[in-house]
Length: 408
Length: 197
Picture 1 (cartoon, rainbow over the protein chains, first blue to last red):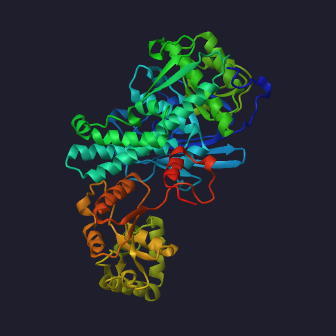
Picture 2: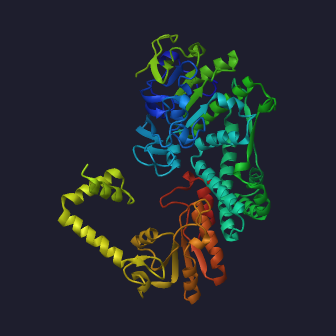
Picture 3: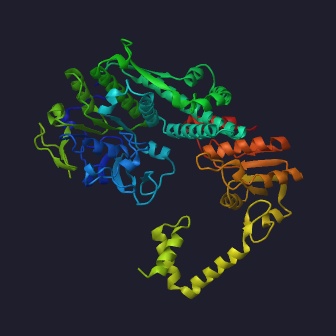
């Protein structure tokens, strides 16, 4: 991956890179963390520890500083800390909070989230610099986060919904308004489904919802299509990871290839109006951005990801994420924060080496977790290392290489 | 702290929009520290407002007169009706001073998930006003949300038989905004709402 981010000599790895760097993380009553205050000092951070100690929870906490449901796509009411997991989940309304301070080229900013008060709804709240942000788009424009987790190993054999969420996050980091289009399309679809299920709805009302559904669905599809094209163009030819070819499978995208967006909106609105009876019977809306699927294939061999081995899928995904991170860096002028949970698992030696070489040259920040610290040995000297045990972090003096940079 | 009367006062204040428990406590303290100067006057004003203020029978605005001052003002242009979701939207538009016509408060937005249906909105008085004649244009000034847009669409459907012009607030390029920074959805909306130069 040196083609993506030029490697820098290890001793000269920059302490401060361009783009937002997580400088301080505070976690309270979240998952297995009672109260944690951590000040990562490095650009690359390796966190190792046994299973169940809270490595993924830490990354999930950071992922929740962006809009959406975080790297586990978990429901808000399941996030509060449970003092005794054998007694089931925390009672409803239990408060939890995560706060991050980020340094950027032109200063610093704070993002916080949580379910802060007992008795309020289960919706989590996000704050930017201590105040409610004007929109989620504003937050997404401030901080871009990409992640890779072991759960994503099954991305290409799993449901289309999982793939849509993954690709939509890629789109979102480049087109922050995409989140609003997706949310609008989902809201209009849910309302239309409800009206159709109840029966006898006012046609004017249904028509209004279908017009909104069409407007948002076409905007979301156009953004997906544009980002996939930019991603294909940005993927370097000499990458050590297989180049991924992503294809959007969706009738809206098909039409957008040959017709202007406003004409596609008209077509979608009319199609939805004529499918009301059928959709009422099915209990679902058969057309829309929510029905799209994406396929990923090795661009060279044409082999679909779902037919590839677990290791090949992981290499494809990593190549895609690193290519996307390079595209975000080029277009936004700031690299995204990478959260890589067990990134080395399933990779062969050459791909592991390529991953670590890419990370050494990465201009942004990356938080990496793994059970075995030895797996990250190639990052010795470039990364600070921590051990995690039962929701507490400690410096890891056993990490091979020079004294890591860390502060607690 | 302060007894049940103080707690009840704080709890009631905290239910008002814009006041959380902390600001409600500050407001209660300010009232309690000057009972004669502030509290009695506030209680009297609340009681007077409760007795005098009612929804306007024509437009739904809140006023001590019926019809309200806006509906009764002969200088207002009765040929242009602006439909808003709530009285607070009406007051916001009045503060801007841009609309010189009259209003109609719909009383909510259609919401299948929130349980608000056509029969829950104040549509009949609006249709009756239009049927009386003299209305040439209805401006739909509803929120730029899925429910707001769907309600606007539904309303325009209902108004079609009357032959009045139905317009809505423009969405799109913000004042001072540059095209290259706009997302596709906003650009498409702006393009649809284009106007002759």
